Amino acid sequence: MTESRSATSRNAGMAREDAQPARPKGILCRIRAQLARLGRDRGGVAAIEFAFVAPVLLVTYFMTMEVSQGLEISKKTGRIAIIVGDLVTQQQSLNKSDLDAIMRIGEAVIQPYNRSKPSVYVTAIEISNEDTPKAKVAWSRKLVDGTASAYLTVGSAVNSVPEKLMIPGSFLIRAEASLEYTPVVVWSAGDVKDLGLVSSFDKLDMSDRYFLRPRMSQKVTCNDC
Image 1 (cartoon, rainbow, N blue to C red):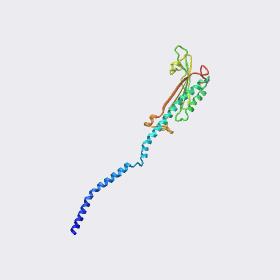
Image 2: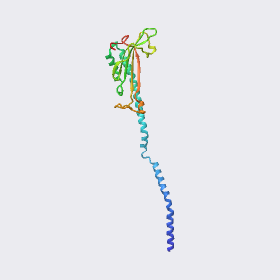
Image 3: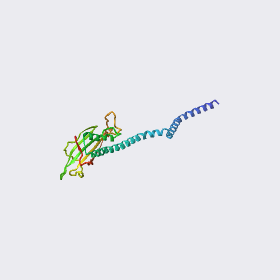
Image 4: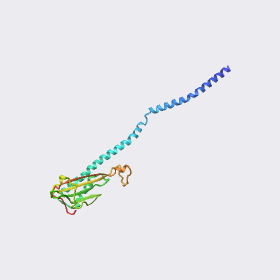
């Protein structure tokens, strides 16, 4: 009886020893099950997707905003030139103070944009009464950075008049407006200089020019220009 119990004990011990190598398989099965459960878990997917999509949405938003605002300011720059030129051609004569006041209207037209100031140039052009007409400056004035001053020398040649406007004995008013547009994404209220890729988008040049004829008289004179 004792021998049979000993044999049974030995057999049980051997069975336990034989069962021990099977433990790693159980651990691997549990790991696989955990990984499978993790793969099926959809918790936090929306947050991860948002983290990928949010930068693209922000970039798209700012690009759309800048393009739309840039197009609007470009139109306003041209509007400055046509408004100033139109007001000047409605005068028979004026002086520097009148002309400066008209040019300052451009600063109001560009509002609410205020990151840079527009420059306005007004030039009166006389076309000589010759077989081959020549264009010369009768008077001129400019407004740059909010300060008005003389522009071109009286009597100097003007080469920018279109051929179809070179009518002998005629008179023209040339109105020009320009603006260094500063995008809001690179603008700094403290006037800090930007470097790298950002600086390449700073100060985009916008300009427009119009030639108009006097409305109330043959010429528009400036008494003290």
